[in-house]
Figure (cartoon, rainbow, N blue to C red):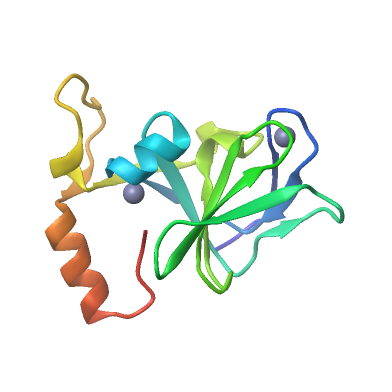
Length: 142
Ligand SMILES: [Zn+2]
Ligand SMILES: [Zn+2]
């Protein structure tokens, strides 16, 4: 975590600040792809995500342990959170400067459709590898 950075949804009704990690991770799982309309490019912001007061943020509980935040007005993908809201992976593309992050990893690579691939050099993990990692260290993903 470092500097506090700003971002917003497409319509601007949801603005936020957070202290993101320098590296972004991509998730190719089917849930993230349906939700985001692409691959979800997320930045770990720990517990630092703060929306402006009155922002029409909606939380969709997508699994036992996670929920997904979006703008109730324009539908923009904003963040994946642990179900209790304690930890957030914020959409890299919602930051004012998405180019500021290093795209370092890709997870659920085995669920990626075969018709595209990134040219970046990244650390790749399958869904099974990710789940095994989170089982070993609670506070997981999805
Ligand atoms: Zn919006
Ligand atoms: Zn995912």
